[in-house]
Image 1 (cartoon, rainbow, N blue to C red):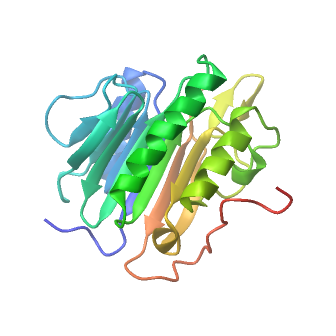
Image 2 (cartoon, rainbow, N blue to C red):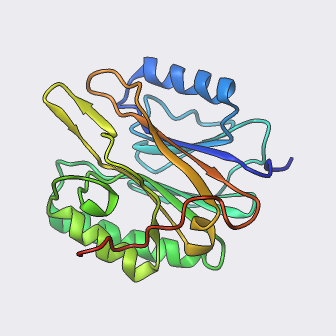
Length: 227
């Protein structure tokens, strides 16, 4: 099986909702989504086209019409899988864990991403980090750490705009982020937040990967102006 010339990628946090997971599967079929990164899934099927981390907090799901996922490694809070010519990394880190544990998690994740070289890498998920680098009007202590981490790896931020990815009654936040290696970032266009989430859930983000460079959105880079 082969990846379409311009595959569609979706990322979303399902907040452990069975209804949201059913909707994800339906959406992937209707929109012909090729692969999705899913934070906080309701359930990670042990077989088929799903691949999850060690503690079922994040997963990658691929369309049955495309290539299979080839798991490269998994840990607590991350899953890395080969998918055609790309390496996909899904991530999730709880907002309730200490900053020191977040720093240790990033160190583990850095080693994993470096092991994927020279394959183009797309890393996506919810790390509960806030920074202007991905459009958040406010920052938290994790934000600068994640920005520096991405810079050390030479990753580009793909997020565009300031639409909330997490919807709350008293507002929202932008905690779902997408990074890519420069060669892959140059092929991505159409990164957008799809505003259809219910209260307490996360909006999905969708991006297109083009067969060649010049997808239409230049990579933002790891540091926005002023940082």
